Image (cartoon, rainbow, N blue to C red):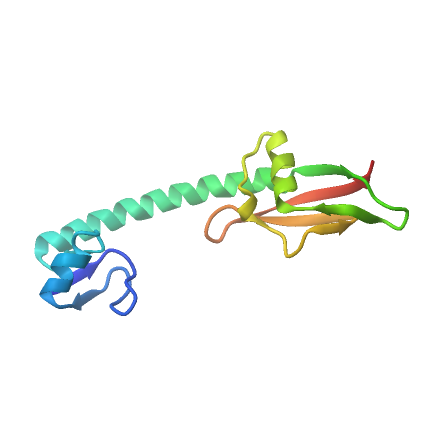
Amino acid sequence: MEVILLDNVEGVGKRGDQVKVQRGYARNYLLPRSLALEATSSGARQFQEKERVRVAQESKARVEAEKRATHLNKLTIHMKVQAGDDGKLFGSVTSGDIAEAIAAEGHTVDKRDILLEEPLKELGVYHVRIKIFKEVEGKVRVLVTKV
């Protein structure tokens, strides 16, 4: 049975591929999970329509993500923490702390989207990357100062 894949399926193919699979695999797994459509003329039209809608939604989301990125690029977060005389922090500034500070400024960011290689452990100025969309990232300036 020939099907058009609606999503990447490991071992079968990528989104948009027209592949030949066993009838039972298509009927019992791919079709009920909306991973594929039958490769008929109506199935091809449905796939083209779904693809057009997906591309339109993705481009709209990318534009909004780029707007968020420009707002975040202008943002400076001040983190006042306790530190020793040598500039080492008593503890650290984590992605969760940065997410809370960004939320206090009126922007919502999930702490898992903050790309910190390791928590900040010294006083200073840091440029922290934030993943907003697939290839769209923003950078927030974080000033870690002593209380």
